[in-house]
Length: 424
Image 1 (cartoon, rainbow, N blue to C red):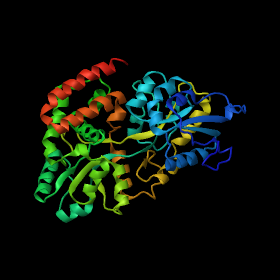
Image 2: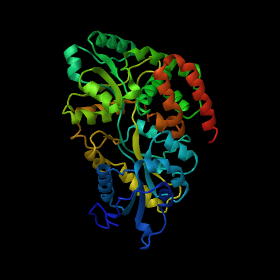
Image 3: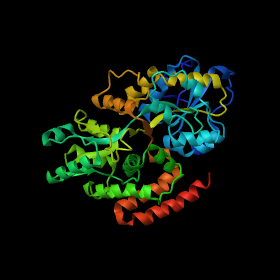
Image 4: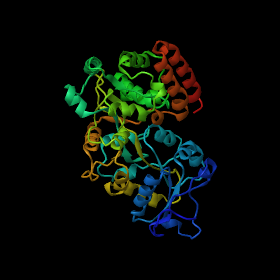
């Protein structure tokens, strides 16, 4: 097999380059090496299948000095869709995954290893990252690598020109929205063509109205979607909806970003990857953000939505000692530097990572995360994907089309939730 990487065998036994189907994914990983060098080999399953992150991933693994790393690269969506079969088959010792519910889900089923002893020696990880890496029984099961925050983005040049200031409460935000309307702007850019974009707004509203613990419980299927607490979220969203950009179901997130770039919209609730659109327009230095404003002083605004990518270990790795040694290395600033260098729209999870090359946006994101009380992961990571993508996503689109139907929409969500989560 040819490889796109020129790495020595000591650095990397098998670089990625494989694009496997789900069945192949389930069959890969583990096993003894035909060369009999199992004790010095640790196998890693990776969803970093795009060219640039795959190369950065290979560079990161090549710098591991504890042993030989064999990478099993699988196309990103194929990896996500096949993860259940993968973990119940013959998984690699270590694999890429997401923090939050999806990590806890596999921990509760005994499909991943306890990494508490690895965490005991990690230096530089904020407490919020540890919370996001901890299972329901208090064990750490996940090693964070990078993250990107969701926030309310805007152009500082527009705010300066119009004399706008960042709102810290919903009331202040509504006042700002009224000023923007009077100035001929659409206050809030909005898109939900692909059915996931509005999940970010729902998450932030629920976190501000009901708090982090309730949000986690709701995502886990343990709360009633047709109860008063969820209805209060949509009541607030209905109050804000007149300030949102119309016809959002026909607009991609990239198209909504253009509204902000062209000063047609005032702010935009989105992930920090919106920076990619500004960089393409040569406006990367004219982008800032504020955290989603506070709705209830008793709840506050100290929880940040910041999907975290990282690593887990199989429940029964072929080489547990070397797997944990590799995971300890992957938590270091030196390891994550390879990823951040390749993709400046992400932030190193380890706060001791070299930030000398960070732009102002990245530095602000670091400060926000360090001050956060907890980190949520995004709706389709904090809940079952078959519930998030096939039930909640379409429900949010129905609400956007006709907010007056929210009671029947939520009744339907609750009914489907009971059916889906009953299968666990």
